[in-house]
Image (cartoon, rainbow, N blue to C red; front, side):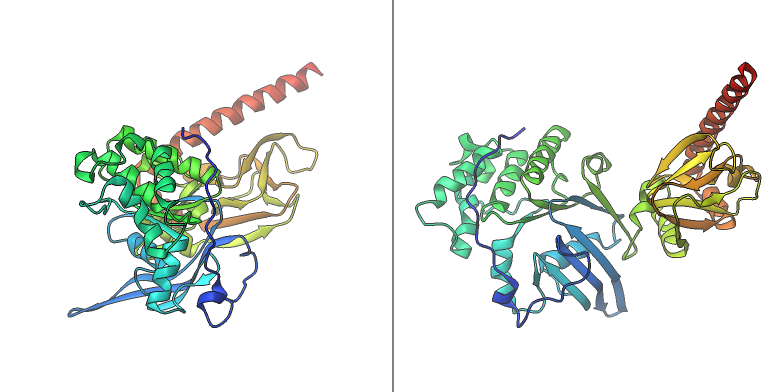
Length: 397
């Protein structure tokens, strides 16, 4: 764990400094670090046009540690390039830290990037003729940040933070790949940017060094940094606050990805696009005991109660929260509701997906079928156990 350290703050470039006018404010985005609105990216080649991003809408809040995952060719690196300003969208708007980054000139965007954004690459991109200390100082020189005499001290503090103070005067080739990557992180922090973007940062690291790097990222998030990381490593996604899954240039609903993590991405995307979205008022019955169940339900917000009967005085068997599912037992067993489901004390946001399509997807995803089968068996055992307990309780009375 890296020790907290007082770090001088950098004056950020405001939107008004770069754009003709302030970016339009949208409801609920006052705490947003990244806002993407209907972002499209199309590449052209002799074979024609290829759409990589298909109208992406995304908000990343300040202080979040976010992983972006997806198969090769899904569009995740292109999505990252939209955030960093390295590539231009074909359509849509990208606002980062209050600045509409594609409404400015290339030179303005380059200066903005140097002061507001730290980038960590998979292959480090350190200059081989400069020492580690000089590599970390480079961004300060580029954007003329901090007094000239203060820069070596700040660079040394950052190298100390990542455990490399004793390697400061070595060239990159004289240290390990892990130490080069930690140097790249220190360099990304040189101008104290509010946002760090990392593209497959652990791709060339062993598991121990990769874990240490995530330790550093977690500490930076605790200090208020926002970190967006593209990764293929599933072991890393368990340590982030939020995982964004992209498939074929479109974002998968995060609730769907959380509730059914073993599904193929194309199936997750199908549910994202086809599921009906509904709001159920507090206390309202969603599934009634003994009635046919025709949909799988995914809880997107709020909670539900699993009840022994259909009256408000019925005993509560369990509570389900956002990211959990219900109705799968009935759909897989072709029966009627074995218990009642009622909305909790707050409105419940639900996604409902029809039985026929759910069963087809499960048939095409044996791993998910096995996992759900185990869940079904566990819930049936739990339900039978509670039913026996209620019966004994009634007999004692």
